[in-house]
Image 1: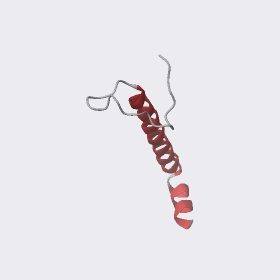
Image 2: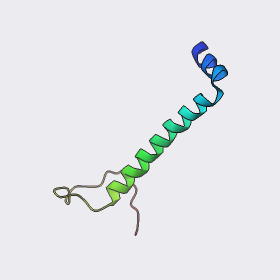
Image 3: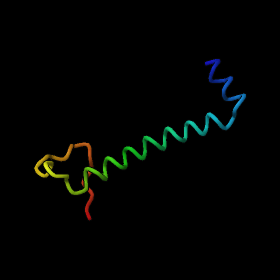
Image 4: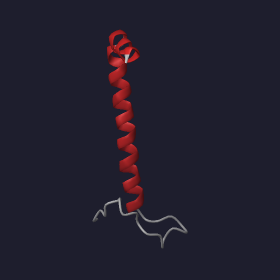
Length: 59
């Protein structure tokens, strides 16, 4: 915990920037995965089932 306090005190914006970057990457990956699963299937994947966790998006 001391290391985190030291980082926040010495570089106040670095911790926020890293946190926003990590959260943004996770959000982009999640949204991209949903978009990919809802798009046309690549060759060889036409008959595969959609995972239950991916919501169906109506066009």
